[in-house]
Length: 366
Image (cartoon, rainbow, N blue to C red; front, side, top):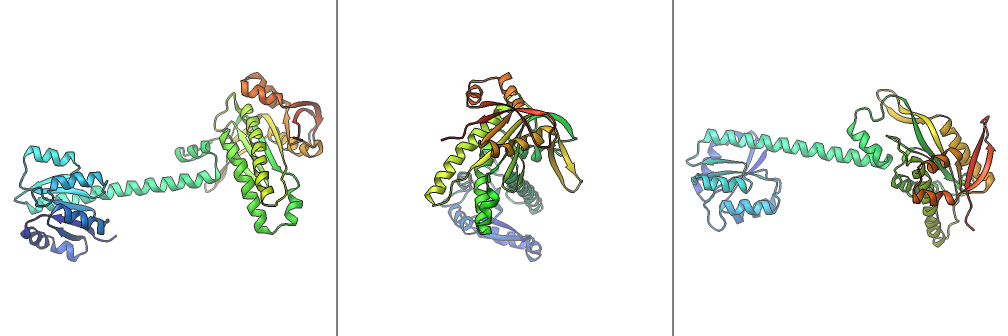
């Protein structure tokens, strides 16, 4: 770090001589770097020219603009510079006015130079502490912003505030959503890699926004597929309804994206969404150096199979009966309206699963 920049503001010419003489060793050692002004307006000009000035030594009685007026101006401009009043006007009224206007400390004239040096160092130490706090706050905000690019808001809060966000592996009731682009592999075969990445970003941005808006968490991206969970970090009675609401939001967002694509001469995109509700194992997995959260179990596997079923049934959405039952058990006006859009398709046998699952679908728009 460079020397601390200090602006001495005093209309007495011998004050500059006194300061330069008293602090000559600190100046030569590169600890202090002094500037001088003779009234408040000149001080404001120097601060504008050198905004990295950290500290002012400020007299009260000066021509053009006095020290107390300068303090008020500094506060109005939200200047980060600290001020030490160095004045012969050491009565309580001036001290209180100076402190109320933001002065850090008060040294009376005639100046005790040892006391002034102690006060300067104390003030610079405080400035250093505030700067470090600001640095840590800025670093925390950058970290939170970076986390927000990859995790839903509820997980960002956990990751920022807890040492062990999800803690030991445990069993929870959650709603699970899988979504992907229909025919993506075939589409990607005929597209430049850069166009594929752009398309995926556009798809993920739109779908992730709907997940976050419905209180969901993106567990992971798997190529063009998105695996989302509702009920983290804490399960609630609205998780199943939130997952279905998210799916509806995704389909609406898809319509808007396809309108944009049509205007650009691009083909429409179709997606398939699978939804399920039930118990799953959730928690932190990995090593001390690299932890990630996971959600596993039959509920997750079934949701993935339901998503695959959208192809053969030619529907944009397949929901497991467990999810529909969970929504019906805690009905709201919105949830009831969402359920009315679904059609009961009876039981279906899913690949890799011994028992049949009752499913509900959403008709594909005409």
